[in-house]
Image (cartoon, rainbow, N blue to C red; front, top):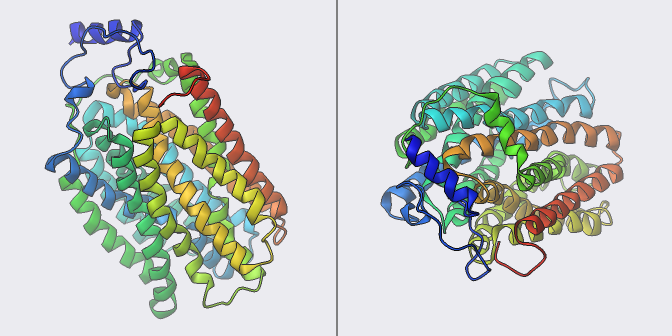
Length: 441
């Protein structure tokens, strides 16, 4: 193994990353000594029944884990109108923000566990914890109880499920990686379509507690299928936890820029998911239409998660990320702000933002994998998602404080500017990788 790792180091030293795509015909360095079996681009199946079965299992895992994250607007509305009506919107928004933070931020730990032990038992334990957290949430009525059950317990379980699915898919695909990740991540968009409608229909009929318990049983069954189908192509590589493994990636300028870009993108990414329902109500939207705003947003994010991955594999993942993140910022400033008083404009904005933000979610791990050694993908993806999670954690409360209840201009400006800042940082990262020239990167 030491000799194999030395070969990897030699390859990287000569300018060829064992898991990077610099583009064909772009002046790439001459071929270097081959990496160990399993790590060369030619060793990735990039398809086949086993590989696509992993994608299917990941699709179900994302339906359950990030699909519920896409319902945060429903939770926000229910809490403000129900058990937490005596709390401010900014205070309540800490619950879904903490939920998103733990789901994404815990990947710094989950990713390291994945690198060392593989997905099997992490996924099984995560499924059990996730379902247990939902059952506890169904019994919660106080602010601190909801924080503990939704913000911490079920979020930790969802993080394990999400991490195992994402990193496992990465080990099976190279040339088609962004496409495979896009298909997998579209499961969360489908969850964002089905689950809000399901919750809106069930809560008046059977109440919030039994609605959440129903979700718990459904997720237990679907994640159980994921436990059987999701696996890594690479064998586990147990090694002791070292702080240096988290610090060393920051010696790479491209890694630092991508991490900062992820922070800015996630800083504003979830604000529309949180506040579009509330804004539509304040704008006088038909009450029968309001419950379908989030499903519309998430429905359009299904092609938004698949198509950018497809084009990213062909035109360059960084090129595609720059375009869709810029689109998210531009339409926020050019459509959401002028259309604040129009229900139609709010819905159109939600649809376009759903498409563009979906691409950001699916391309984020693909862009990180492109500049990473596949053996360290769990740790590096985890660090990237941790800083993205810090943005998600602080973004919604900041937006709630800026909005001051029903004044959304500051929140909208904050969202648009942070998305454009993230896009600009990806431009800088691309320049560090290949310079200003036209290239598929």
